[in-house]
Amino acid sequence: MKQYLDLCQRIVDEGVWVNNERTGKRCLTVINADLTYDVSKGEFPLVTTRKSFWKSAIAEMIGYIRGYDNAADFRALGTKTWDMNSNDNQAWLNNPYRKGDDDCGFIYGAVARNFPKPDGGSVDLLRNIVDDLKRGVDNRGEILTFYHPGAFHMGCLRPCMYSHHFSLLGDTLYLNSTQRSCDVPLGLNFNMVQVYFLLAIMAQITGKKAGVAYHKIVNAHIYEDQLELMRDVQLKREPFEPPKLIINPDIKSLEDLETWVTLDDFEVVDYQYHEAIKYPFSV
Image 1 (cartoon, one colour):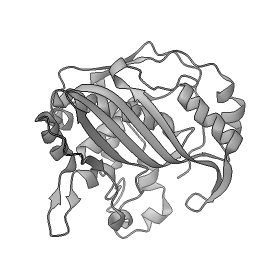
Image 2 (image 1 turned 120 degrees about the vertical axis):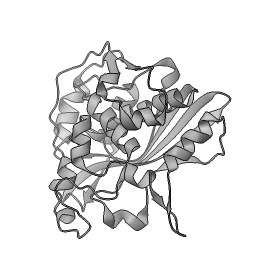
Image 3 (image 1 turned 60 degrees about the vertical axis):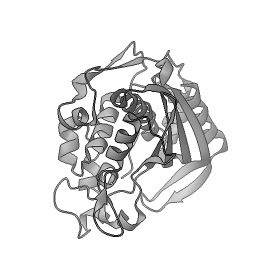
């Protein structure tokens, strides 16, 4: 929580106003932020200065792991995070690659699980990483990327948190996640949970110990219609102690995550929080 609140205060104090072309709004912006989450100690980075909906964040990451490209599939898992981008984004509605209602196009996990090769065919990046780590192999390039500039026009949204680089030291697994852009009041809460969860679940299914997750944000911003709520409400609240995330130990493989796992396989305990804050969302 201290890392999160320090970043929020830094944006309020030092941020520069930038006009965002996609949303038509101004953003108070800083460049470069680094957060760390010690998964080995179970320090689950769930925001406590407002009620945070961790289930939706984990459901979205499971959808990425499964390679989903449709908002209906994400909803069935337990998150509505792709509803607006798939159905209310005018540029995407006009895009000839859009297949119909709820279609997100070639996004995030759909890219990583089916990354096109220049000479034809595709590569399942996640499968390769899992297979390597289970064998105790780290080729210093165990990178799960959602970023494919040549395919941006085929999806409703460019990936924000776009790269996850796994590293193995002995039997301990580490993660470096990189995010090009972050809506701090809304998105960062999700993203912190997802980085922690991704390291925890990858360690579990590969039989490794979870170490530390490092989360780099390049462009961290607060939208102009969010600033008052952040400055005058959330930053005035005292944080609580972090809760714990409990993962069903029966999840033992990538195939488990692809098939039978649901949100019932995850539990957060000892979560104390302040009341929710309804920050505006910008499509």
